[in-house]
Image (cartoon, rainbow, N blue to C red; front, top):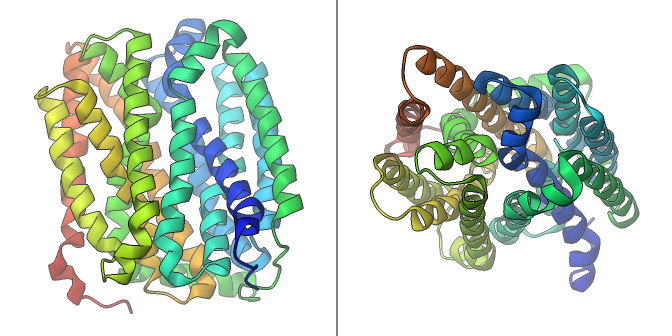
Length: 407
């Protein structure tokens, strides 16, 4: 079924999805601002902080295969609405957590709860919007995520003296419950859009996706460009700005806001021009080739300290908007009815990459610190390693590999 076009599509389809992804991205990045408070209150090491924050990514990643199957089988309304109830419970549990263990479990529950927010939206768009509008709708939904990241930077830092980090999470719990109710009330109840295969058949189809060139070509860049950016944005950007650039927490939060404004600008540009670009023959992989090359150049500028801070972080955010195109690029190799399984396969790589980079950076920082490096030097070494991994993952995106066909 395709709902009628017009304002009703935005109120009944786009806005519920947009609010869900807004909340998902806010929760993904909020620990970047509250990390100094958590470190001081709980006495966490860099590795502890990385592990606590990255439990979101781990549980999110582990949910991707079952979420993809469920979205294809039951539709976005039931799957995303139910999972957002878990988000509300996880946020409430984080608000009352007193230890590393309880906070980690609560953050894992949050990651599980928001695990369908982007994929549910992309599945809905594939069901209810024409193919030439997919890039634009993806850009707009990602812009909603950028607004969530914006909220999680300077605005959250400004709320901390008023509500405390626990009060912020109680507020998030209430918002999550409200969005879940809107999704149940507004979205069409599509229950038979996807394959009605058995669990074994569904898992076999997922295995075929993971073995195909249409997935493998984009797996590395999803892990290290998309996942690496998420790890920086959601945690390590603030320590970098404070220790390498010498900023205060408030000033670092402001620069994080600049990064997120850049991401918003990039996503809105894709939303506004994506349909026109698609009609003129520009494919998602072409946007990825240009955007990821630009990210490498900008990150080298940040690493070297060359140039003013704010424009570099803004550009990094703007160029990161092409991360969303990997879902569309990979899905072009597969039938539409398994769209959710393909996009969640790519999402799994992104979030496993974010988990590995976020926790791995913490471990590396502790090891380098024990070896005598100060925090600024340790961060520079770790960041250089990430850039090297990104450069390697860029190679399969080169035009030469267009010759390979999906089995």
